[in-house]
Length: 338
Image (cartoon, rainbow, N blue to C red; front, side, top):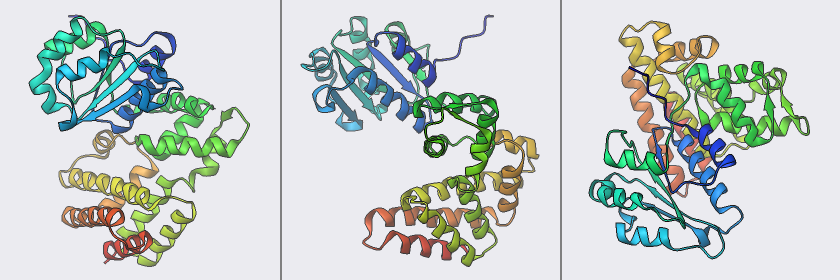
């Protein structure tokens, strides 16, 4: 039996949009939020070009998605300023449960005036809707790259910052950051600023910024929490804030690190070997994995879960409370170190 070709990914979408006319529908599927966001951004850029979004873009989510008839009328209505209208549907599970057949009917003769971006958890190939989307459009799989593919993803993403990476630089950055696409993208932006007018980012450039990379600093922060060293934790926090990192970003990074610690602790408790842990967490074996396992071994899973709850509370507090975000972060670290 012939092996089925993999679904196109974000890089395939970017190449398609650069070379071809937009298709009537794009199914954006998968669990990676950064990749989904980039896919939607690529569609917006290619379809709207310089048109103000309010003139040719509609975005709906969940219960706000209009009825199929209203949606199809909108897709058939030409934009005055843009060649095509773009309609983006997100959180579509409930809407598709009652409207999938109507959408299949629309895709049999789709409008030439509008493009539909359908963000769904999955669009199986063996369903009528999945077949219809693939017949006249494209299904994009938004998944985190595998470890072995990560340097290639980094090199490709560097082009969005108008820079190139050689192979050694891409490998070094992948080793330092791991599969965390938002952090990798932010790091590429900082590297682009760091090298200025130069075209290529080198391994030496990556090494020069490694100690100041947010992910590296976050490891120092979680290490201070793991060893219950509040003074060190507060010093690292000061360093992160001095680098102009937003409080919500710091919390999101600590939360990401805490999730990996919980997963690592769970795997350690199950007796998983280091190689399996590295594969499961999508990390390369080496310094950062060793650090993670050391930190995970310093607290029980129950302690880590309680710490995660504190992070969630702090995240809400920074968004809803009048308390200064720094105070919230300092209070959080003191409690995590307790």
